[in-house]
Image (tube, rainbow, N blue to C red; front, side, top):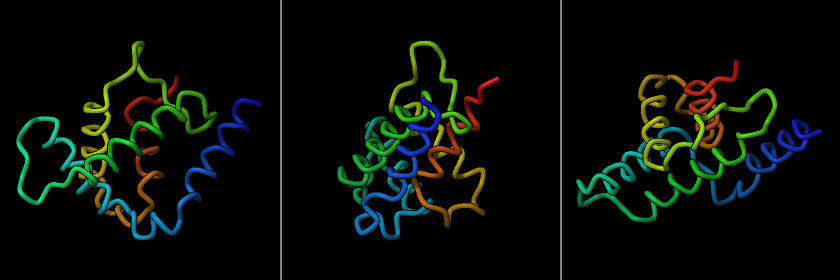
Amino acid sequence: MKAWVGAVALMGMLGSGAAMAAGWDGNTLLGECQSAIRLLDNVRKPSDSDYDSGMCLGQVAGVRYMMSDSGDYSACFPEGGISNTQAARIVVKYLKDNPAILHNEGRFLILLAFHNAYPCK
């Protein structure tokens, strides 16, 4: 039952805000998360925006929270969890390592990044 609820929540999250998220693909996500990492590392560029950083960190946190119990797409995070900074770095690395999939929806790519980094055995 928990897996089914998680799958429904995932689908709702991926489908919600379609108007706001139109064009929110991996390319946009990568830029926002790179901006967030620079903000957190105190090495901001003039082009970095707090809005972009917040979009990355908010979406990353939301997907991470949802994935703790989502059946096939769950992630087995280490005990004690991971920080938003570490989560953003995982997402950026995954996106840079997989440029052919950047056309996909951003939250789906976050899910894949965590599933890849913390697979359940």
